[in-house]
Amino acid sequence: MSKKEQKAFSFRQQRFAYPSSHAAKRIFQRTSIDSLELMNLLDNGACVNIGKIAGSSRRHLLFFSQKDKFYYVAIQDGLNGKIITILPPAYHKNSAWKITPEQCLLAKERYERYSELTLVRKSMKKAENNTPRFDKKRHPSTHYRTVTTTKRDYKIWVQALYISKHLTTKRKTLFKTSIDFYLDDFEINIKKFLKNPVLYEKIDNGIKNKRLFQETIYALCFRKKKDNSAFYIVKLRSEHEAIIHAKKYNNQIQHMRQVLSSYYSDIVKSL
Image (cartoon, rainbow, N blue to C red; front, top):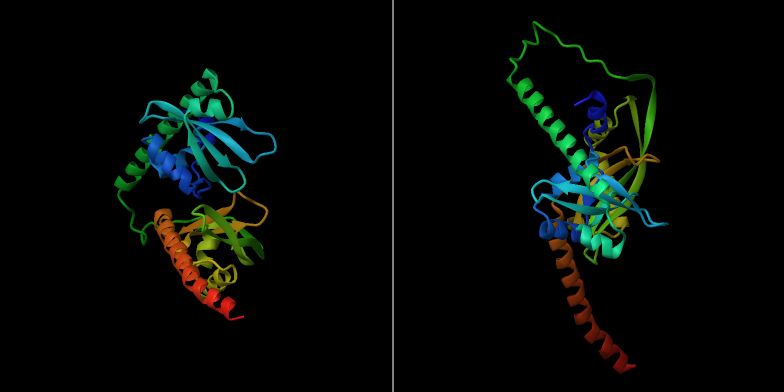
């Protein structure tokens, strides 16, 4: 594999794609591929963007599943990374447009190059793990990082990824803040920011102010302002667990309304 191809498939350290509850069901029902594996595949460009409907932010990504020996289309919101659904080519033809053989061939080629690079990376990591470690006292290591001479800051949005009352995945900004840094590395600075105990109080207050239920939030997203490619996700629980809690709250609210409706009827009668 050439250096150009390796650069094209440089593995993302931060995830962008994530499945909606509907998409997660369709992945399970229609494919043999794991959801996390599919998100990695899409994030790393092992697919073909075959277009989108005019005026829509939803892009149609054609990918090849080796386990199924078949092609599928993932419909993704290009603004927030959410996968809306997964369609077989026949479904896509009926609801949108026909997929060409050339597009299928390109999707398979990109998958094969992606798989090849994955194996190379695993081999390199295995070889690295098998290499004897040096004595740090005898062989002190030197690390080079990009450091600014003056303190700068990131403007970030702290967002909650949660399950709504309609059992769909949603994203809501809890608050906006700034992070000071000298070392220009977004992920490292966010991890350092997470050690600040004041942060968790602000997150709790943000959740209360936005009237969200803690248990329906499955992840927190720290996103750099005006740069959708710079973000860091903190997973809190699985989406399935968050859906269970959302259903529970919906049932509790429904029960409360039924109980209160009888009191309301008695008050109306007494007037």
